Length: 450
Ligand code: CO
Image (cartoon, rainbow, N blue to C red):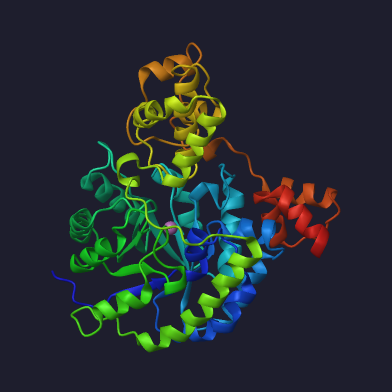
């Protein structure tokens, strides 16, 4: 049945917008003057927390991320607040124990979050289980998310299966997360059509403009009946960020799926963020004019990372190996079972390919690659090459086939005790969680602020 309901819009300016264009350096004070106005627009949700914002608050801005969340909640009373969570990795880069994941989810909801968007870099749904369950128990909306990528193991039918698995785990909605902007307009149309036929929960699409296609893809997704789309206000839109909120509202106004948002309410908010962007550029000496990078479609590795790898080769006097590196990257990805290339798998594949062209194939293997082969990140989409397994696994060793976090003992009490030993015996649960995720930066933040 054709979806003719108004498109709902989630605005990401307060999280992904500045994470994509301004190194996650927006301060709470940059947000405060317009929060009530943003609350008045009629957005479905505001994404304002999680992702890299938590780390950035503590590390660069001398801000308590929990305090930021409470402040936003105080000023945004009608609109849902959304956060991004990396499943069992929470907001960090490795797997945490279930008790840390649960406590983090409960405290996020208690401090003001309504919707938790939960994903895993490998799309191993077992890595979402604990976070999804805790979200439901806390009474919040669990958005089951899969990462979009292109490979022989990522057909529409594979994504539909993921979506069904997530719904059976209790997902209240499904998000297509296309962090590198790989989904083409027609692929978006087909995938949304397939998902709408397979599941009844709302579908949201999140696509970055990195390759230049996202605005077209979003429009085709809307034609195919997607329920919710992700956008950013003009000063934090486009390039490696998202489709512009104002342009999309103008595109849809008066049409079948009119979102019923008054674009005139958006202009003054954007005026404010334009000034905020200039302020951030100045304070942190940043260039926010990043442009687009259609090459990401051939290599699936964002251009910024390619230029870093090239620099590494030049520094080693191996500039002539660059072409070989571009050829090697897809080979390594295939050997590792075609992981979607997002943090951390993009870095792991990139550095493995670089080592291969520098020293010969798999002569030097970093620990992270060994851990993928040993199953410690979870199930890879395709099989891992036998050659690579033979090189890494010792005789008789089998990769683990259970959920990686099953091997991690509870950590909350240990963290609480460790923090007490550092001189904070009465730390709040929130502070213990900050410490569990980012021990060094949290400690130096506490030293300055507690
Ligand atoms: Co994003």
